[in-house]
Length: 136
Length: 175
Figure 1 (cartoon, one colour):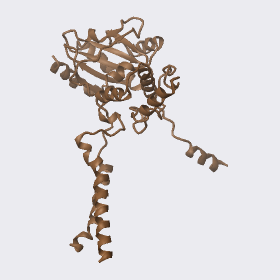
Figure 2 (cartoon, rainbow over the protein chains, first blue to last red; figure 1 turned 60 degrees about the vertical axis):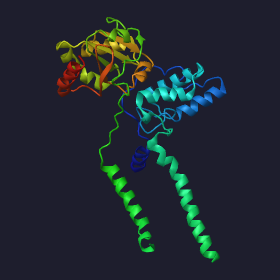
Figure 3 (cartoon, rainbow over the protein chains, first blue to last red; figure 1 turned 90 degrees about the horizontal axis):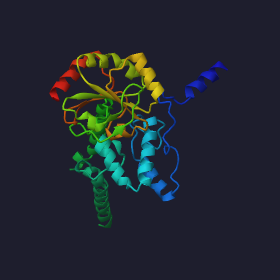
Figure 4 (cartoon, each protein chain N blue to C red; figure 1 turned 90 degrees about the vertical axis):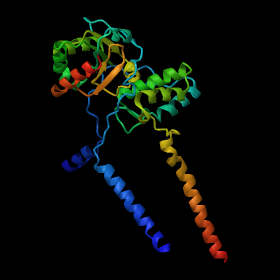
């Protein structure tokens, strides 16, 4: 019995222990925008913005109070007519590329974008060699 | 040619192992610095967070003399730990303004009664909006603001006793 209890305890998800605010969440942190297409835009953006408190989560997934405030701010700005990419750029100008999960077209990422093409070309080359050898 | 090529996969594999191993053992820097260091403070105008101090606006931060902007919260434990160091800085003649994040007036009053009040003005940022605009990633953080209202330095985490001389130097540099 005790062993089962210990096992159950061990399996419990880690609960973050840092203090968080006692204030209720910001109004649009966990409430959807009534306009479905705006909510889609906001959701897509939130899923690619990184949480500053829980650094491996997006703000859409994080329970940190700062992530909730960011979600609320994003929804409010989208309702005010701001484009998602403008909001992303505004956040990147504060926190750097780090805050966005969306890869940019910056020169440092060209190898990343180029790699699939390069690998496909390599594959085609290998295939051509094989086919030729088989024919001859 | 073939003899050389046959070693390529193994070499690639070893290169990847080396890359991952170096990533595992290299100390990780998870601190996210604000990109606004060197730039003007974003504009803000916040209501008072405490009963006996006025609110804070960005215009008030460009007073011709370098000052500190402390980002804190009454619910934040390290903020209480850095309070004595802020008091030391105040006694050294440094002007300190503050922004309380996601806070309520009664809680801020209690925090200041417990830990002392080194602040000239305290603005209330109830939804972290100014914190996000500042590129600040948590509490506590302290910004050195120069006389023209530009961010000269960002200190992330609490100010420890041995950080005080460094902060004073940053304030002198911002003159």
